[in-house]
Length: 177
Ligand code: NI
Image (cartoon, rainbow, N blue to C red; front, side, top):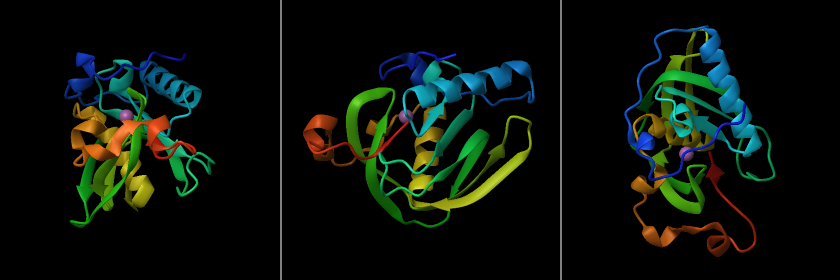
């Protein structure tokens, strides 16, 4: 079922989400199916459970080769629950991001260039990866939602934050979840 995505200002987006404790349950699979359907409907690169008002530490993401993200390497379709992110260097890179909870806007957001992430999937099986670049950016954006952080809260240069049509008159750029 396609669910309504909460928008910035809704207090449910500011919560510290709770750990998932039970796996391979019908309600958990149903939640993931709803997230996937909603993400694909809105052509997003990811979606976090809090964005549909569900207070759990669960994100999904994945990007196939997409003309919308010409510079982005594909990111495998992933369900990541109770994630732990560990940066692997102090290197930071800035890139354009958007968010389905902040529609119509884009901003330059600093993120760790390289990180390790670990968590479990819908069946409680361990999942871990070392990633960089676009993949690392998507994971950081999604997992921020679990701590009540939306990307505008990380912007350092507000001259690089604005409406899509003004920033990119020749076409959109950036990751949108
Ligand atoms: Ni987002």
